[in-house]
Length: 497
Ligand code: KIV
Ligand code: ZN
Image 1 (cartoon, helix red, strand yellow):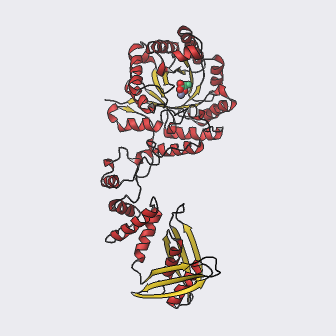
Image 2: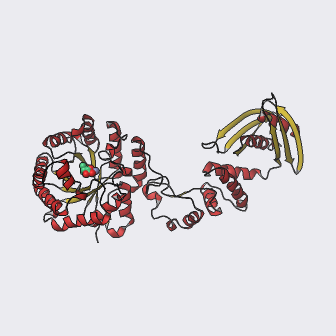
Image 3: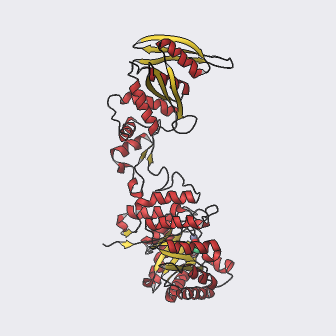
């Protein structure tokens, strides 16, 4: 059976941009519009031109900058709004006017102080007027979610007759249950005699967390356009999110509904919108959240490593995420550690136990162990086998001018110790080591870096020493920066032949 196309109408730049703090300037809007074009959306709702000169200008500039998607401008069912929208769309290759009026009891009686017959007349006039300027007119029945289906069917029939190409059925207040919304669309498909002359569109808000479910029920019952925003941003609890609808349809091939979205660009677009609009994406957000493909429990990690599909229904590559993330924590098992080390290019063999024990020690000190930490653990493991090791370190420091350090080294199995003073804990420890090894050592460089951020982080220490004109490098890392310094110094000395 051939699949039906679902048109993706993106309203990130209109409904999404209405959110306080999310306002973009025209240049930023153009950047988002171009990203939406690359993503493959069919329609971009670029603004509400009568609302402000800035919105007007953005619709003009987006119309010039973008060629493939239809550019849509919002209006009320008011002549002046429609004229201004038409003017803003004059550079659009394909322009659409989106006009409409409230159809629920609340809107008709309390907001518009009107009645059903007047509302139908105003709807017809608005659509006819908009058709004077553009061939593509979408009508929205505001608060359709709470409108009576019988009246909604009358309005839908009338606006299609007046020339509407798309009829939008918004659940403006996010009130509907998925079954209610699906039934509403089905009712219109079954009771509007000229429904074959237009497309029904869903436009759902997320007040009860059902925007995606309602939109999917809408398309399962005959709607062929879905109105969405990137990351689900929008008024109050937001709008239906593009990524959720697109990936739901892609994951359920049996629905025979396809979109033109290039899903590999989803993550990139999500990040762009989030950063330009200063709207962080919640970590557990479906598809684009930081944790959407991250596995942290040992059982899940083992399952994903054996076969990704054990715990993932979407291949992260499909949405532009490079790979499933295995979060290494104290709960991770050997399989997860081995897998991660292999991805980093290490081939842990018999020494996995040693690394695993070091890993658990570190994971107890840090919440998450990252790739840099692992590289360090592997390095430390190699150092286990060198001829000179630190056996004991004691530093006494305080307000006295000199710090004392006692160091005991294991040199080829023999324990040797010394105590020395210095002008700080590192200097004192290095002096004690020099006494043990009885060599002329000159410290050329001493560098401390945190691997990531946070006071629980592993500090990396690099030292360079000179002995008889030759430079030797030493490296170490630890959550204890003094131990790391001493270990790095010993690492360099152990390289002197
Ligand atoms: O939610 C809504 O009803 C709207 C309309 C203006 C389409 O955003
Ligand atoms: Zn809306």
